[in-house]
Image: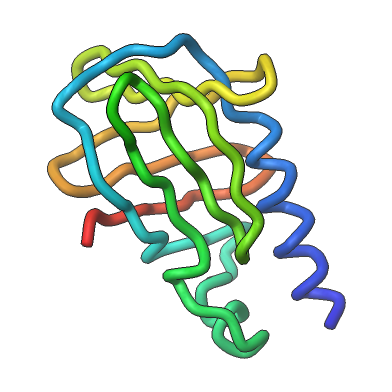
Length: 120
């Protein structure tokens, strides 16, 4: 149970860290979290044990440089900007740069590990 709470809190904190300026791009659609590693541990397995699925964790890129992020049913909206293969996400005045590689978005953060979202 403690790990489930840790996962939930970590994802909630990630949502508050997202930031940048709005912008448009050809990036659109829903990207589902397919990988999450932190401290050498596979957190995707822990999500399954907690009765959650990857589809509960996603980033959806909307028109007009807007995005919606859902973490276990709790969603928030922000803005994004694309420069090359860097996607800057903006939420509540905080910023986070993610890397885009084809149909995958990778977020690497020293506090929350590596998360990969894949367009489905």
